[in-house]
Amino acid sequence: MANKKNILVSSFVTVVAVGTIGVSVANANFNPKNQRQTSAHEALKNNDLKTFKEVMGDCPMAQQVDTTKDFEAMTLSYNLRQEGKYKEASEVLQRVGIEHPGHINNYGPQADIRNAIENNDWMEFQEATENKNVGNIINTQEKFDALVEAHELRNDGRSEEADEIIKELGVVGRYM
Image 1 (cartoon, rainbow, N blue to C red):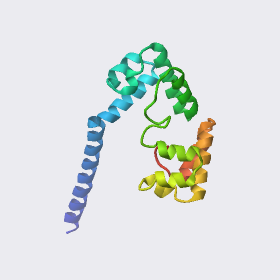
Image 2 (cartoon, helix red, strand yellow; image 1 turned 135 degrees about the horizontal axis):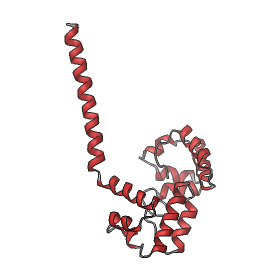
Image 3 (cartoon, rainbow, N blue to C red; image 1 turned 45 degrees about the vertical axis):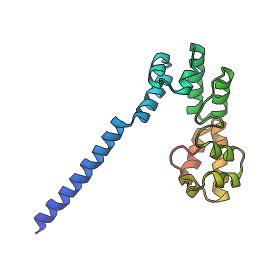
Image 4 (cartoon, rainbow, N blue to C red; image 1 turned 135 degrees about the vertical axis):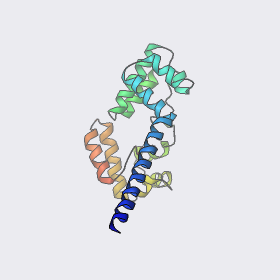
């Protein structure tokens, strides 16, 4: 009887492990958005305009990159965003006339949340995060104030301090 139980438990564990590995492999191999993003990020890191244009194809932002100067601005902006310097990143793109459709200006799905944080507006944040996970986590004025502080620290280039606050708040992934 104990032998049957061990076989059953071992079989269950094997099925779960194989299923988990299968899902991970499928996501890695068949998620074109993530592949495209990863390739675009690599092209920006490597300052590789040709690869960037090939990977991004008909993306509106890629269509705005006509010259090496534009791409250098895009690369600089990308590096600034990686350092948490969102305002400076936006200014770099604006100087060469590139409109960023994602996470810098007033565009994209998180613009309302980002604006609420930047304006230190708790009520606006509550409206923008209704039915969103971050709204369930940042559910008090005190937590919101800490999030605003983290945002300001990140804008000042103090990403490690900002990340510590974000970690304490329990926010996972990009919050703005």
